[in-house]
Length: 278
Image 1 (cartoon, one colour):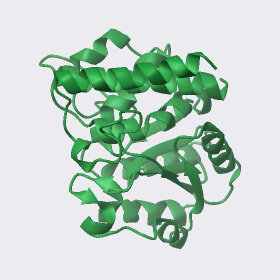
Image 2 (tube, rainbow, N blue to C red; image 1 turned 90 degrees about the vertical axis):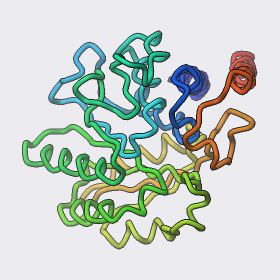
Image 3 (cartoon, one colour; image 1 turned 180 degrees about the vertical axis):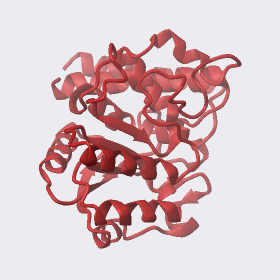
């Protein structure tokens, strides 16, 4: 896909995030929106996945370690064709398979159930080691929040991955600088993030999480890195695309009311119209 096509698709991902969280009257829009471009590039450009065969043993794997951002993952999966886009508005509803956090037993395309922070990267590391042991060519990608990396289990997994030289593993940190309680520097600063991963024998790349040239270059470099896992520090904007949500910690885990929903959708419609005119 061209960068413009990816931008248009990412905007659709964001629309579905807002629609689903509004319908549920609960959820996590801020971090889902900041990662929308990453979800889009992974599922529409980078990863070897097939909606018609979601359990293909040779597929690439993705683990959403920051599992509360399920609306973003679900939106990408739905637009890719893993399940009907119309089902997005059943998010968190009684009887819906689209729970508030990813469920690998209920949602086609979800490779690991996540929610408890820090555990997703551990599962991804295990998948990467299994690929090495089975002599498979698949790659494993996992997305973490920058607040999430305050969890000690993250660094146990990083130590394990670096020690085993898992060059089929790419760890992406959504570095929007905000977590549920405020700025990461004020809560429990994880900085310097890059030096920490380097200390665990990772190759580290910095990228702009909202620039598809930057995303493309970073993931290409990760694929070409041999003998060590890669950590990508993705600088992003929490709430990206919705004017009143951008860079606001308060929108970490809160649904828009009806009036706010209308404003958010108008913001995204304007972005879509601008992109379609290019």
